[in-house]
Length: 96
Image (cartoon, rainbow, N blue to C red; front, top):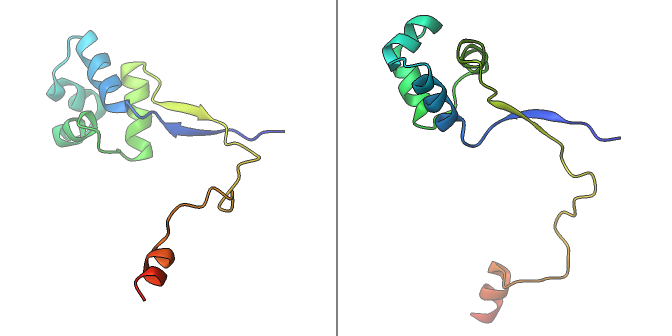
């Protein structure tokens, strides 16, 4: 069985900007409707991650989905794989 979790979409800033523009709202109008400061809107649209509470407000006020389902791979191989690239240790051993 796989567990899924919700993660913020990578293009959340663009989604916010497009949804706001489609409603014909300025950043100031959106901030007022969300009871947030304009700087929160500007920084979110620029790609800085807002708080979870602000994300929920964006989703509710703009009717947009910003949190996406993510299912991590259960059989992810970590480390070891024999591909062996050149490591820092290899470099230091060669320098002696």
